[in-house]
Length: 378
Image (cartoon, rainbow, N blue to C red; front, side):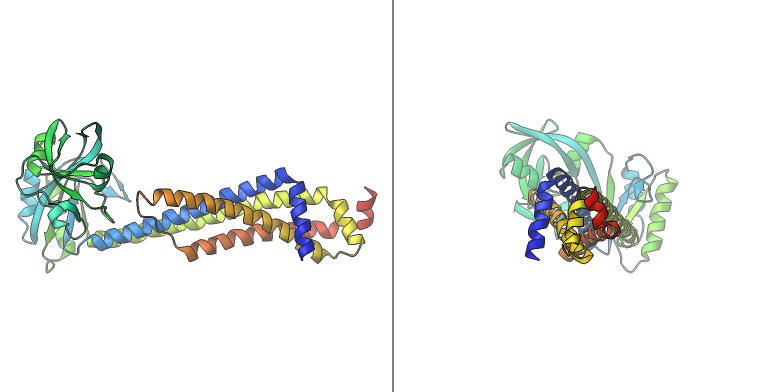
């Protein structure tokens, strides 16, 4: 076996260009598989995390109609009349408006854009999942106070009590949020509702609330939709039931895409390997004929080809794994990346097996056709 290994290595070194192209093909295929698997698992983890952080009695009302997973209408807003109408429902225990707009900020010589969130209740209502690094949350009715998201704090090094300019208005930093796990609060600035109204007007991006769990959730959602649609509003009511019903289809789509891409990548890799091996066989017909003449069997020759293929596949996989490892290390500092190691191993095994079976199946047929006498006469 050691001699076969040395001979296979020599064949690959003698045909460097084709071997390198094959390694590159396998690397690209493996990279695609690893990338889609990591993105899939990270996405699944995110959706489940969001499901866990969404409380059973919580509702979020959006001024858009979501159909088939996407927004079917343009972005619209709610107003105070919508808030009063929904708050009149008996099942509603708490309902508050949230304003979210893009705005500019400046601190000393640093500036940028961020999501400006205006609400007197949002941070308090979600304090179980949005933790403070230092300071306090926005107090109801406060003026010109701001709580800074983790990423903005990291990029500006702003301190408690400092002044930061938002939309040409000066705010005092009263709190700094800790790095978020599930919520997308790291690049947001939180101000009071009254301050947000001064900057962006009396339009609400959403309404968030709590309802009595003794009420029928399905009927409550229908009542909310009925009230808002009578006022010519597009609406989507997100509740724990809505997430449960929709998360399954999303995850199934992601999983199906992962399987299909893995299969396509495996086929791509196998074609590249097959091309290399068949081209190598054409160049080595005389060598194979000589090997047969001196007593080498078809099985021994196939073992040689198997070792040669495995070298190229494993080299391509190793290169892809190294690149993906570097990218994971880089992006993990920005957001949580999750991957399922057993699932990755299974998919890499599939690539390896498919990439070996196709070339050997075709090569075996050509090897049987090589006649030592005819090849030596060429």
